[in-house]
Length: 50
Image (cartoon, rainbow, N blue to C red):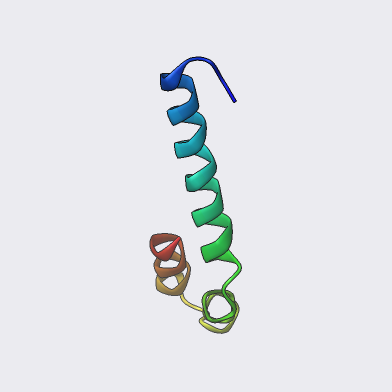
């Protein structure tokens, strides 16, 4: 690990954010909603969910 606590905390926060974003985008119901709703509102709701 890093010797500086602030760098270590920042790295953990970034990795948590990436995991949450990629995990949420991989949920099947979110992706199905993206491809089955033809309106722009459907895309914006998926973006909001992520």
